[in-house]
Image (cartoon, rainbow, N blue to C red; front, side, top):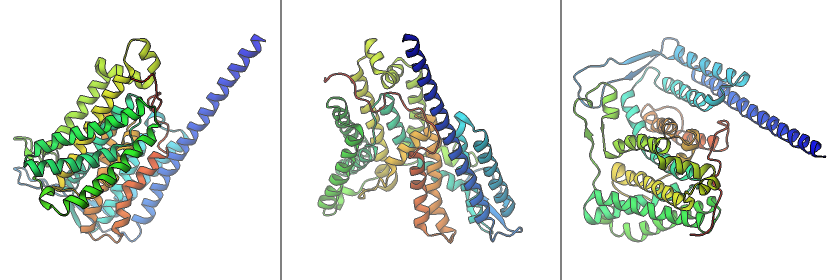
Length: 433
C-alpha cells in the first residue's frame, strides 16, 4: 500500500510538471504569434504607400545650444520599415518554434520597440522630427511610471499586493499642490505628498495585514476613495479658490560638463529633481533589496513568511515597513504630476498611470531595472501621441492615446509569458498586531 501511495504521488507530480510544461509552451507560442503579427502588420500597413525614394529625417540636435553639431539621421523609409518588420517576424518565428525562455519578456519588449520605430519612420516620410526631443519626452513620461512600479515592487516583494498606486498618486498630487500653494514652498508640498501617500498606504496595509482583507479589494477601495475625495475637493474648493491650485514647478538643473553632451546631455543631465531622484532610487532600491539584510528579510517574507517567522523575523512589521516605503514612492510620483510637470491639479490627472506602473512592474519581473525598461517603452509610446499630431499623421489622436493602455491590458492578462512573482504575494499571514 505504501509503495502504491508513493507511486501515486510521483505520478501526480509528474503530471503537474507536464501541465506546467504545456502551459509554458502555450505562453511561448502566444508570444510568438503576437510578435509575428506585429511584424506582419508593420510590413503590410507601413510599407503600403511608402515610396522607395522617400526618406525619414530625425534631428539629433539638443534643445539648447551645444558646442558639437550633430548631423541629422536620415534613413530610407521603405527599406528601414521592411527590415524592422522582417526582424520582428524572425523573432516571432524563433519564439514560436523554440522560445527564448527566460528572455521572452525582453524579446517581446524589443519587438514592440521595433514596431514603434517602424511606425515612427512611416510617420516621418519626407518629413523630419527631433528625435532627441522625443527621447527626452519619453524619459519625462516614464518618471511617474518608474516611481509607481518601484512602489509596487517594494510592497509586493513583502507579499502585499498593492493596486492602490493609482489612488495614492492621485491623493498625493492633490495634497502637494494645496500645501505648496498655501505655504508657497514646493519642498513642503513634496514632503506633504510623501506623508499623505505613505499614511494612505498604511491604511491599505492595515486592512490587508491586520484584518486580512482581500488585498485586491482593499486596493480598489482606496482607488475609488481617492477618485471621489479628490474630485469633491477639486470641485468644492479648488474651483472656487483658484489660488489654492497654483504652484511653482521644480526647475531643471543642468549638470555642468554633462548637459552639453550631444543627444544624451539634454535627455539625462538637464532635468528636474524628480528625474535625478528616480535614477538614484532605482539603484538604491535594487541594492537594498538584493544586497542588504533588510532586503533579504523583505524578500523572504514575500516568498515564505512562515520560514521567516521561524527565524525570528517580524513578518507583520516587515510588511508594514515595505508598504509605507512603497506608499512614499507613489507619493513622489503623484507630486511629480503637479510640482514637476503641470503646476496645478486636475481631476483624475493620473489617467491610469498607476495601473500602467503595475504592468511595468510585472513586465519587469518585480525587478527595479526591469521595471525601468518597461516604463521607458510605455513612456516612448505616450510621447508618440504629441509628436505625431505635429506631423499630421492620418490616425485619430484617440487611437494613439489608447496604445499604452492596450499594451497594459496585454501585459496584465499574462501574454508576456511566465513571470516569477513573490510566492506569498497576496497571502495574509500571522496573527493581529
